[in-house]
Structures are given as C-alpha cells and as structure tokens.
Length: 139
Image 1 (spheres, rainbow, N blue to C red):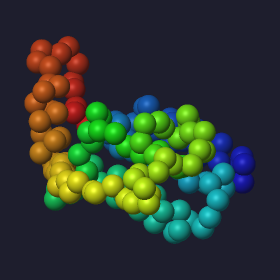
Image 2: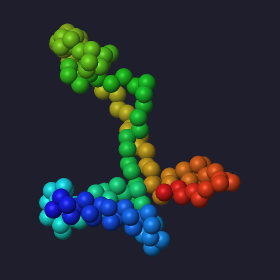
Image 3: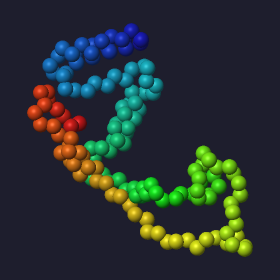
C-alpha cells in the first residue's frame, strides 16, 4: 500500500504539472496515511469545508461589541482591577457593613452584525490592485 501511495502521489503531481486538463483543479488524495474509511473521510472533508462558511451567501456573524477600556473582573476571584495572571487569590473586600452587593448598573449590550458576503465585497474592492503583470484572483 505504501508503494501504491507513492505512485499515486507521483501520478497526480505529474498530471497537475503537465496535463492542461488538470491545471485548474484541486486533487485531494486520501490514502492509507489518513485514518478512516473512504466515504467517512470524504464526508468529513465536506463538513470541514462547509464549516468554513466563507462562501455562504446568507451568513451573518453576530458578536458582542468589544470595548477595550471597560474594566472586566478577574476570572478567578471576580474582583476588578487585575487579570487572572496577576491574581493573588485574596478574598474580596467587603462592600458596606453587611457585604451587600453593589447596585448593578444596567447596561445595554451592543452587538456587531457582520454579513460575510458584504464584508468580502468591501475587502475585494479595497484590496484590488490594477495593472498587475500577472492574473490575480481574490480567492
């Protein structure tokens, strides 16, 4: 099987380099070096490619807006003013006589909506270079 794999790799490389009919195609060789059965490997590959979602027409990313200057509590002790790497594990300071919780300030959470097809169009327009001496594909 190892010899067959070497021969197949050579054959594919030869065809891609010398046969005009093979120039613009993508060949994926899944031999014995990749574990699993053939049809399962093919379906796994298709799922991974679909999971990229960069070419889906109606794909939107919804994300909470990142505010860099906003104080965030430590993930270990919950106190504000330091990050987890600098946490000393000290108990939190009391708030008031009976350690009551501070009154929470209600904040509206802001989200960013990114439509990937629109983002791709803007990036393509922004990054396009005219007059290149070679053919250029945004992909």
